[in-house]
Image 1 (spheres, rainbow, N blue to C red):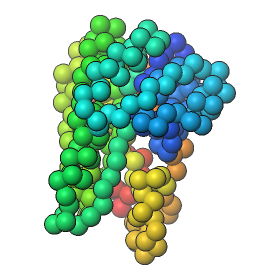
Image 2 (image 1 turned 90 degrees about the vertical axis):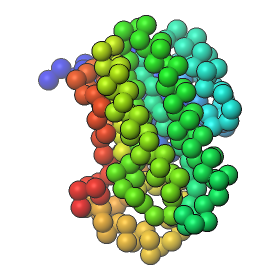
Image 3 (image 1 turned 45 degrees about the vertical axis):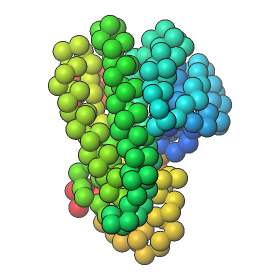
Length: 252
């Protein structure tokens, strides 16, 4: 097998939500495969910058909150100008607000939708225009196992992740003719900041773990292989797919 199919040499990847957790792991994986990285986040890159540079790759930082106002257009322009192009877009920025549905405030609902859906839509639209002019592109959306389920106690998050799954499929249909592949990764229950509050409930953790055939929660590093596959030439005929990285949770 020609392993050069997985090489990202000469590519530039834009990754959102990159300072920690899943975004950090995916950005580092793309850098290991040869890509230069444009990292977007409200707090900057922090340790992520050092780890990307340790791989010998260039990195450019954009401090921006994609849920706040119409910042996406500016981020897209800056990202393209940083290294001249964006070949790969990883939409990873996302938040969750936990509460019973009857107590879910509109403030929390709007905040989740602005970050998880509105900002993602606007940034992808603008980056896709540039990819169309390039004649190629890879767009990878961080969805969730909740893109397939109803969940409980996280109604806005579930709604946003169902919507991102829908956008993934719609964009795959529209942009496939431009040699742009749009796919998603559906992480299962992962050890990240977003699950920190949930993981304080030891009974819930035990119940969830019992439903995972592999018997453990995922680590950010578990997304490194999937993101490189979907970003590389190895997946050139994969379009509109949602790859579950969940230890078998959805299959149980």
